[in-house]
Length: 156
Image (cartoon, rainbow, N blue to C red; front, side, top):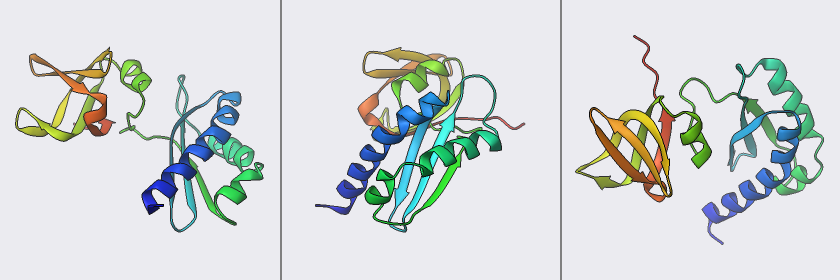
């Protein structure tokens, strides 16, 4: 088994176990990251307001109560629970719908019109495509062509 496959399998198991617990706490699981140093990072969000330290502490305590995680992570591990930040990753189709009208940066696996980096405003989802309004044009980007997507924040 390839190392990436092993991490993907672990991540899928962890998501299946922790997502219902996070939902029971009225939060959304944004992402799970694991690495070879037994580091588990869980990113949570909520629809109303911002994630607080108390929110992260609550979810962290709930996750650490799950005995099966020790087995999946093969012993002791370091857990971090955090908010997605202002440049929140867009991972699921629901993320692209939820943040419709917001500015985003999308990096594609394969070039579209001689580029693979696009910045524009999210204009929703159409079947298997994200619609991004760049300048005056609408661009349809296939979900399976998205390498990375984040909200884009203008600080000035």
